[in-house]
Image (cartoon, rainbow, N blue to C red; front, top):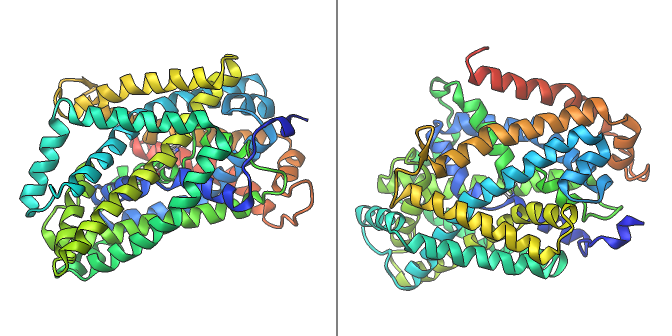
Length: 452
Ligand code: TRP
């Protein structure tokens, strides 16, 4: 009965696009290239794909199973399927949601600023100029904060309009356009003089450069990019209908997400090598490299460069928006359903908390570098703690729950939609979540801490 009371995504395509809209975002276009750059290039990418295929896809199917079975927010779904104790995964997820929302909305705000700067023609200049522009912007005491506030308010408005009208529509529109534009920019970037160094950086692995941290970074990036390990996809799956083929959906989403990440890499690295920006320059990589791509690659026709830059930042902003919505939704649906307050009020609380934390994150990067904890700026700390600890641990516990505690017939029933799908992959899936995922994630952790 519950199912009919709960909002649902409108159509099959809507389900895929909304979930892909959550997955595709700054994680692909901003975080993937800079993590690749900091972890040595091609070898990281290969380890990343291994993580997606072997660990992230089974985790995604597990989250779908829990959410569609639970028909509730993340915390309640975990409790329904596993019993009281397993609620903890959902609670951890909500906390993770607040932390990610905070730094995510800061970077989303940067995208807004870059739309404005492109419209005003302020990004035209040599690489040094673009770097100075970025540094001045990030360390300004008010500009990034203004962008952050505007962005959070946009998210807030969509969230209060509800699942179908807000989230689904936004995704349907922007995903295909983003894809086409990316391909165009990739082509332009790869034609820059000196671009081939960037291409080999991405595809020729140098195993010497693989340090022990690379594995956990790749795992964390896979979870971050696919929105895993914090109940986000549990929440979305609670809006799926009975006919959704969970395996197919997860493979399609992983494919779309990986494709966009690779395209983002192909857009950034050839250009970074061509204009002499170091690939390991961290969170600023995309923001310093891209304006140069637009300027140099389309130098013959400045009007094209102008339009492409604006469109790109606009689409990136939309991609960030659909992802931030999904993070916000985890926290909002929790407050709404568990604390019995209206959705509207729940959303206000979430937006307010993210605003405070986001402002602190933003200031910690620029105007007030003394906002530090454990020797890291608050921004870096939130990013680090969530993707290297909270999400992999969430994924690990989710696999334990489905592999060892939930009766097999229940997960088989969800996996095969009550026996209507053949489910020939169930055995593989079950083997992966029961043995491979928990052991591999544990192994990666022990490796990180030098135990193995
Ligand atoms: N996956 C998104 C991206 O790549 C970010 C995101 C949305 C996310 N929801 C999440 C990350 C849940 C972790 C958990 O940009």
